[in-house]
Image (cartoon, rainbow, N blue to C red; front, side, top):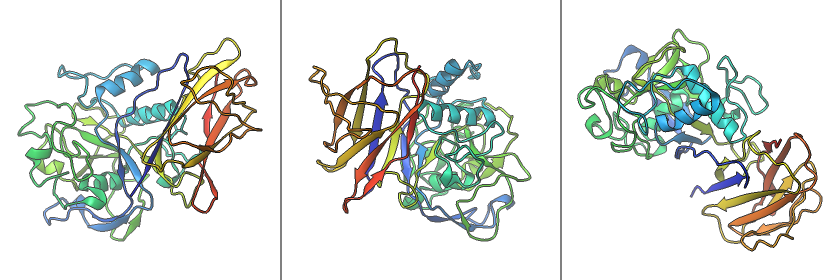
Length: 393
């Protein structure tokens, strides 16, 4: 069984963590991509095999106005119009492809993850270098067209429906026959086999890659940077006929286009533990963003909480923090669990849930720091997470 390890790292002062939409695990696998029912458009064929070598986390819902409006407020962007239908938990609309990837980068920064995109929309790896390999992208991004279709079909749990979760679009999506001429709040229809909502209908969703003809050979982690069309759009919308909401239907638009029937959802690649020093358990990491905490006096009191989920009691962890951080258990605050660090390492901690109070006496100015957590596997070997970066001013 897949086990999810969640960490929350937050400062006591001047910071409130941003709440990320629910993310759903899409396990790696192989599927037949394209129009399987014999009456698809030319651009939905040929049907071809696609394999994914890494698991994926994808948004349970389309990004909503509530979420996107926070992004606009914090970055000074003008909020997109809602056509008078209302904001809240309706999917955000009137956003371009560049708006969508800017949101992804902002969300990555909120969680101290590397940006997934440069200013031109190229994918970036963990070192900030342009890449065409999605498994090397750590930040939030838009799903590729193939990832989107695999998830919409239900991934490895697919029941083979024509729409995302049913052969009846009325059950799972908003389209021209039932939408009353507008978008609807996310999650009102039935989900698909993975628990994803609104992947058929409501709004078209931007994908990361460019529109082109399908290949006629098997593909592994496909990602198109060049095509004869702009970015791919998937899923159909409130104003389109049912045919457009098929899981195989595809369209495209200008990267600068905005529409009242077009939004997006986010995703993240999960690194393969065989290829990286990440935890052997899949996880989501929520961390303190850069430039968000202000400390005027020493000592700087911080708190971090570890919230392991579905891991055995007694699983051991160790923290490593660079730049001579010191941990203290001398604070008389019984609700906190203090730990010492010899050098830059904490002792091994055998507790499934832990809250630690940390006193920093040596972190000065705006020098950046980084930290990671180690996990002992069954053989006793330490598996380290990727480094997580932060900066205080």
